[in-house]
Image 1 (tube, rainbow, N blue to C red):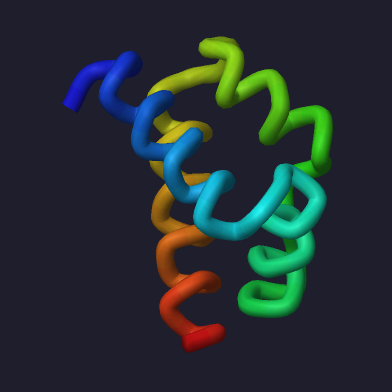
Image 2: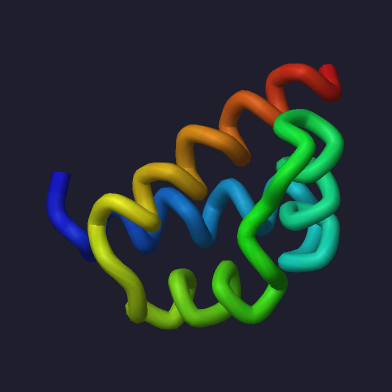
Length: 68
């Protein structure tokens, strides 16, 4: 998966969470730690490494699944 696909996937997950703040909160509640709002914001704007994007995607996916 390339960076563009990861960015698009993260954007979709943040949309499902409702906002960047809600995404941050969901990860915090699920994992006990979370990337900052500004880190998520930078990531959805295309900044950051593939690793950090994938970590955010994995954590937010699990956080959203656990809230169902």
